[in-house]
Length: 115
Image (cartoon, rainbow, N blue to C red; front, top):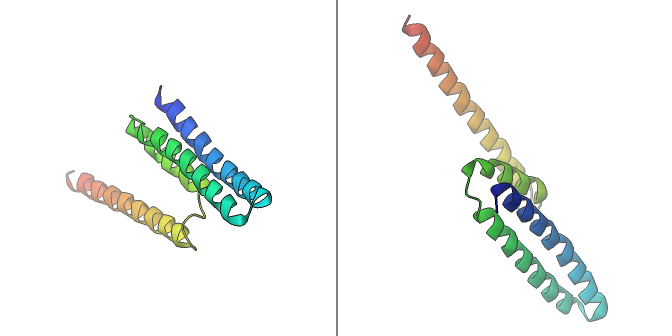
């Protein structure tokens, strides 16, 4: 199985984990009680999340990792409590941009100094 298919299946299993867990919670709550629904929901989520994690971990080409992590960030923005994930993304983006700008400036100074 190629990395593209693994990434696609990882996202499919992740989507199924969220949708089927919500369905199991509602079905268990209506059919029995809230505790049964919660247990079914957690079990369903863990099963499909494990399958998703296996697909993502088994990706062999590291070039897929930015796409996978970017997709995970887009799919799961609210798992981190509060605005922590947004703040982390903003700070990481600023740090990477600053590092790229610093390296570019250093390279321009080296190129202009050698002439």
